[in-house]
Image (cartoon, rainbow, N blue to C red):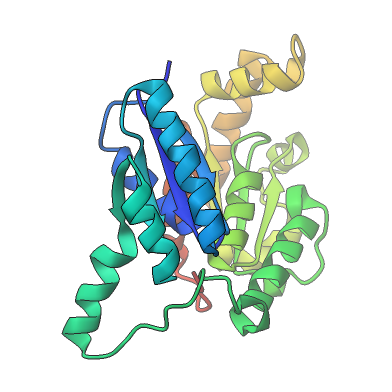
Length: 273
């Protein structure tokens, strides 16, 4: 049972409000119910949001927590005056003091994506996502010279989600290659990757956790057996040590932690958040 409802109210996508709000809520031992209210960009929509928030307060008997990133002052005023929740206005908290300190007015743009489709950064991000999808799981050796980072590791060690995170969040072209029995027999990296050793980063995982993950996909198979997982992980780690490749274990790390470590180690020249 959730202990409190949290609303994220924005005149854009609500991603900024939710990301910032979740970072704060993570400091508390609670499991709130999340409700995102995006595109609240008119007074009428603001009144609808207020009714929803206040209804939740009445039903639950507790003040909802309301994070907002509203730019339109008329819309924000409706929320401020009518909302029965605990209101946390992020732009009011941070933007206004910065305006005073810097002596300039902010753009007051609605949403950080409002004109992003015309920017070079947006185009680069889309290209990075397409590149990562095309080079997922060793599907293609083409244009590896254009990769910012190449992830290697045994199957199901976290390469694909990490590659996509790096592409979507950082605009990096990330390829990933699974290390397979043929590579272990040769005791060498896949030949296609050797010229790009400086871009390679390895992922490993504990055999027990790997067996659990693989069993969900292919139960009662040799692929998922603990003996096979132990052998593959040991061979992969030995290969990475021989090749001088930087690597880390994904066993207890989030995708965000893995990606941050990779960025610190690889330090690609093109880094766009």
